[in-house]
Length: 267
Image 1 (spheres, helix red, strand yellow):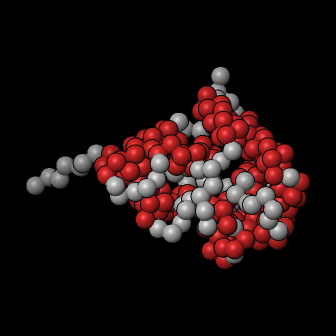
Image 2 (cartoon, helix red, strand yellow):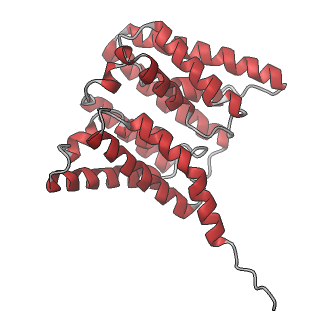
Image 3 (cartoon, helix red, strand yellow):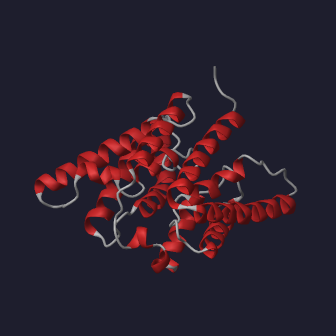
């Protein structure tokens, strides 16, 4: 039985909420305050734009961005980080593009990159040292990701191909001596797993055609490998994701042209 779009969004958001609650248990109450600050900021902006456009605010849809964004904040981060980041994410990453289903870049990643560039000292886990994700969190992300795939809430191709290709590239890079990354630790570090199942799988920002989805996943893996191996960014997922988002429309355009029937021109 195919789930309705509303139920799909509900299950997706519940999965994100579970991950956020795990953060609260692991990192402390400040993570809860950060989450509430992000959600409150997002609501104010989304509600305001809904009123301006005279449209109904879809209470399930607007929650996705702050729930996802909060997972990228440091557990001991200041509340203004959540407010600035969530505000930037929703306003410049989503609302100004037209809202749901119209944005080009993943809004949560827009907010994360904004904070990483503007306030690097306050986002040390993104700009200083690659952190190994707690094992329980890894298992929880994979379990919830598999659940989303099983219920056909996300397309399996993008997360699976992204993770597989990234693992292969890091293993090959280490074997050839061009990279020091350990392939298994690379998958367990930073935001690779979270990004694969909950961000790269965003239907709005990925390529829309079947072959395009494959190219998109491979491109994301290559970009991720390059950034982690040859730049000063220890994690790199938010940057790789936004770059992949940028080329997704081009991938779609090329595949659409390839699939168009060739018109015969009479002499």
